Length: 255
Ligand SMILES: NC(=O)c1ccc[n+]([C@@H]2O[C@H](COP(=O)([O-])OP(=O)(O)OC[C@H]3O[C@@H](n4cnc5c(N)ncnc54)[C@H](OP(=O)(O)O)[C@@H]3O)[C@@H](O)[C@H]2O)c1
Image 1 (cartoon, rainbow, N blue to C red):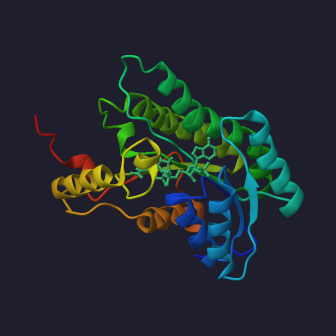
Image 2: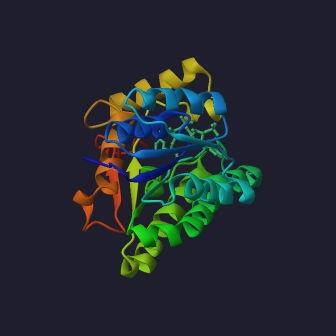
């Protein structure tokens, strides 16, 4: 796949799936905009991308802050003069259930839903000009609710509906909007939610044993699907929520 002269914004490019997508897009010659809050980690991703000859634009921005979200679009257009692809990847989870969980609800929904909604809205005039596309990083938990992760599951369900509504609204203007819904991926997401290294590894090895393919998806696997959906090869795909989970969502839940 070739993204030569395509301007690609990736939120949450400082870690995990977003950082891996950045390197894959760089290999495919994209002009990259890397967004996140941690400038040191963004610089590490940018350095990995530079191995392929391109200098990404780094934008330090918090997806919970409206001024920061506006800055992402303004600085991208000022620097690269257009936007072809928006990857709404930045996201958090919190291990909370409903009881006493309103703070988690507000934080998770603000980051995982409100942020992508606003950024997509502000980027859309530019995406319409280029007949570009949006890829939202959702989760299989959008369709497979789990106690203790209520706000997260709700946020990803909302993101999937947002994907379909946006695809319906902007399809006639030539813009495609899709989701990628991964199963569990070894990244820092659970550690950021408070899990220590050992518990995190125990969680993943337990999950692996129960998944039909007996492995979890890697960030690279997810990035392959993101690049496909963002490319012209997926020119007839819009409003889809593309699951990649080694069969996790068809496994039987043990009572
Ligand atoms: N790992 C999984 O098992 C899994 C499964 C399904 C879906 N996903 C989804 O995949 C996406 C990426 O997660 P990951 O697993 O790669 O986790 P990760 O390694 O923790 O990365 C999360 C990224 O989101 C950014 N981020 C978080 N809050 C932000 C905010 N307020 N403003 C700007 N950036 C913010 C972080 O950047 P900074 O810290 O620099 O701000 C970081 O780059 C998320 O949407 C997640 O829900 C993950």
